[in-house]
Amino acid sequence: MSAVVLIGAAASVAVYGSRSDGPSLAEPVAAAAQTAVPAAERRAAASLLRSKLGSGKAVTLAFGGDVNFETTGYLLESSPEKVLGSVSPVLRAADIAMVNLETTVTGRGTPAPKAFVYRAPTSAFAALRSAGVDVATEANNHGMDYGVVGLEDSLAAAHAARFPVVGIGLNGARAYAPYRVMVRGQRIAIIGATQVLDDNLISEWTAGPGKPGLASAKDEPRLIRAVRQARATSDTVVVYLHWGIELQSCPSEDQRRLAAALVAAGADVVIGSHAHVLLGAGRLEKALVSYGLGNFAFGAFRTATSQSGVLTVTVTGRRIDGYRWSPAQISGGVPYLLDGSARAEGIRAWGSLRACTGLSR
Image (tube, rainbow, N blue to C red; front, side, top):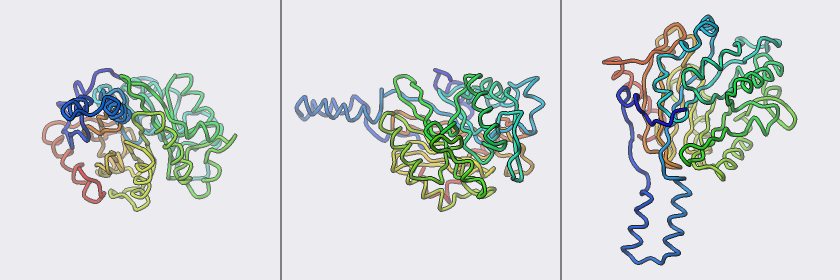
């Protein structure tokens, strides 16, 4: 986490939708003075505005997509800082940086009955931290690839590394619980959940009372309740989802419906991954939705799956001040920031993905 806002990142990204959705804290006071509104009403108006904007100070959030170490395992022990080294300046420039950790962190357990299973050593958390990542979600269709043993090892490794993870827990209350952090007086809550689970594993992998597992977006009422609970005690609520259809660059109807439900419940920023390709982002009412960040540090063997980047969102309480895209290209499982004409084309291509989302700029 960095206390510096967007230093070093502004030169390498384009700014989208930068605007204010509400007045500054000073404006209602000035307006009240002009119209001789009673002091009690002025205080009530200022209190209401503060409840929407928190301390009134901006916070930057940076998001990357899917991370595992199947093609970069050789770097974890020797040079963990190199796995995300190229993109670390953008991640470090944000106050909070987050990715989807799509692997278990274990050396034990029995592989689940599925086509692909992933695991990584405990140095995975060192690789993330060295790049400036502050929190990860493990709510995805690989979060329990090595069963409850793998889940317990992942949690133990995260605890030992003092690295926050969300979307996973020894019971339902912990799996759906948000990561909470205070930044410049702003209370930030981040929830992780997955809408993607193999049909034969949904029951086994979903966390419940006294039952280890993942926060499942398939139990939508439970997820909505978690968002509402976070909303009541937070200035900014973020939900990071594993969802969508692999290799499809437009959101499904299920994604669009769930995004609307989460925003209605109080989510300010909704971020997604899973499709392994980029999807569009934009505003849904006053919230910011990104339907898919694609791969980040991940094996990518075709042009579409190698397109990557970092989404930086600036928020002031419930207000989305702006958002930026820093495009990258994956090579050998490692993302590298683009520059020059390639950067410009990456920004243009990413912006064009909004056309099929129903989101506004």
